[in-house]
Every structure is written in structure tokens, then in C-alpha cells.
Amino acid sequence: MRTMKALLLAGSLGALAATGAVTGAQAETYRISHYQSDGETTVRVAKWFAEEIEKATDGEIAFEVFTGGVLLPAKATLQGIGDGVVQEGFHTSGYTPSELPLSNALSGFGYIEPDPTTVGAAFADWAINDPAGNGQYAEHNVVPFGGFSTPTYPAICNTDEPVTTLEDLQGLKIRFPGGLTSKLAQDLGVIPVNIPAPEIYQALQTGQIDCAGILAAWLNIDNSLDEVSKSVTLLGWEGSFNSPLQLFNKDFWQSLTDDQRAEIIKLAARAHAKAQIDFNSSNQKALDTTASKGHPVVEPDESIQNAVQEWIDNGLGDRAAVARDAYGVEDPEALFASFEPYIEKWRELISNMDDPLDEDELTQVFYDNLYGELDPAEYGMN
Image (cartoon, rainbow, N blue to C red):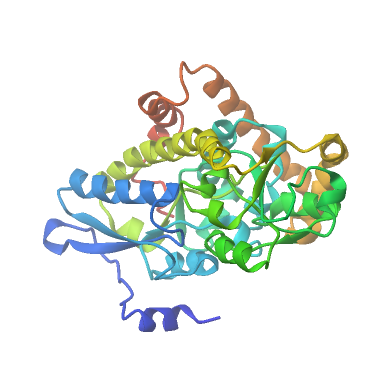
């Protein structure tokens, strides 16, 4: 793998030496890196954030958004942000389990709490406020903000016939982004393949994989997997939730003024709401579009449903052992117990909302119960 230094040189970039507060006289354009392509939800939110923070700071903080991994490939984003190759970016925890063992070990809570808005907010709260959770990111010189959860994952397949039975699953190569769902797939006879989302199209097209576990929006909204697939099976398996929506380079973050950090915190609440609502609302729309093209959208039969339920009832595939053996978590049960209060907090808050798809209402709930409680003079400053 190329080093961060090589990436810097190859891109003719200069590492930012973020010293002192950013002022109008010092204003320059900073960088946000996304490995996803234009049009994907987190990219759309990043572009909105870049526009809004420039307006909120009268041009003192201006970002250029680089997409498609042109600056940093998916698996190098965490290190690249920490090293200052970019000042902000999005990183999927499942691509670096060794670097983010606690986040990865939380995989499985999506089977316990089915509401994506709840579990996404719980993770954001945990990553910001839990000492171990936040410390995990601090070790990589990044400051986390926001969260989200995709809806549950279907299997988007290029098999000759739709996948509906447990027998159909045997030996299929199905892409999942790591985590406990890969363990579930393996336990049910699947060969799990962990590749970054932007590589799915080609992998389906060439037969490298038989199916892709990813949110339905990738069929025709965030991507065009309709073109290289033949059917969709609504597995309903855990979506992706254990990644912050935004990671800031800590040196950059600490170079800002309190007022500038406060503006970012305000925008982080709305960015979180925008992303979650977009994920929630695009799911059925994508499935309907696929069905209108004549692609079968099918339910798994009882053989799959019963096998999954048995797996859940038996301790989520012994997730404690997975956390201990695969991620090196010494006390998995303590980790799970530390996350449960965040689930309970946000389950109540979200259930009491008039409309979780109302952006203003959701932003206010997020700000009042998470982001607004942060002190811009203290958070991320140690």
C-alpha cells in the first residue's frame, strides 16, 4: 500500500500545517475526501456542509470536496485524515477493523434495534461522549461528528434465478462491509466478500461476486447496480451504522476559533438529520424503480428467515466471541452494556417525535440532545 507521503506527492498536495486560529486574512481552501461517487448520500451532505460552513464563517473556512477516492482510497481515509492529507472526510469503520475495533465490535445492534434513526443517533452519541468510543478516534488524530444508519440490506444479485431459500445461499459470494453480518452470512453458508462500495458495480459485472449486500438506493439512486443485477432479495439484514458521518483532522479542528467550531457543531446536527432522512426516504423509492424495470424483488422464504432468527436467538452468532477474537476487545459484554443506554435514550427521543422525516424537527432533536451540549472550547481539544 502506498504511504500517506506518497499519496501527498502523487497528488501534488502539501500537508496542511494548521497552526493558529483561521482568520479572514489566512483563509484558504481546505479539503474534504469521500471515496463514494457524486450523488451518493454522504457526498451530497458533504457538499451541502462545505457550502454552509463557508457562508456561516464569511469565507474564513472554505472546503473543496473530492469524491470517488481521488485523494484517498476507502481503506486509507482514516489515516489520511489523521495525517492531514485532508482536513475532513468520511470513513467506513468496517474497512479498518484493526484501527477501530470498538466501532466494529458494536456491529449487531442493528438486529436488536431495527429503527435506523435510533441506532444511527445512538452511535453518534457514543462516538462523541463515551470515553472509550471517542478515545478510539482520538488515537488516530481525528474528531468524530455525526452518525447515520442505512436501512437494512437486501441482496442485489446477478444470479440466474432470484435467491429465496437457504439452499440458494450456499456457496454464493456476497459482498458485505465486514462486521457481524459477514459472520451471519458465513454461518449460513455464504462466502462473504468485503470490498468497498464503489467496487461493487464492476464486481457484479465481472462475476467476482454473485450478490451485493448494500442499501437499496445503490440500485438506481446512489449508483446504478440495476444495470448489472437481475433481482433483489429483501433479506432485511443489518445496515451500516457504526461510522461517524464526519471526521475532522484534530490539528485542523484545534486551529479554529471557538466561534468557528460552534458553527461546525450547529451544522453537524443538520448534516446528521439530512443524511438519515435521505437514507430512510430513498429506500422504497429505489425498490419501486427496480420493480418497474421488471427486476424481481422477492422475500426470503422461511428457511432463510428461520435460520437468521435462530442465529439471533443464539447470541447473534456469539458476537461476544467475535468481538474478543476478531477485534481484540477484552470485555465485550462491558462494551455492549456501555452502548445500550445510548440505544434506550434515542429510542425514546425518536419515538416521541411527530415526524422523524421532518428535517427541522429531527435537527432540533439532535441539537438539543447531543450537539448543543458540546462546548466548542473543550470538545476535541485534548
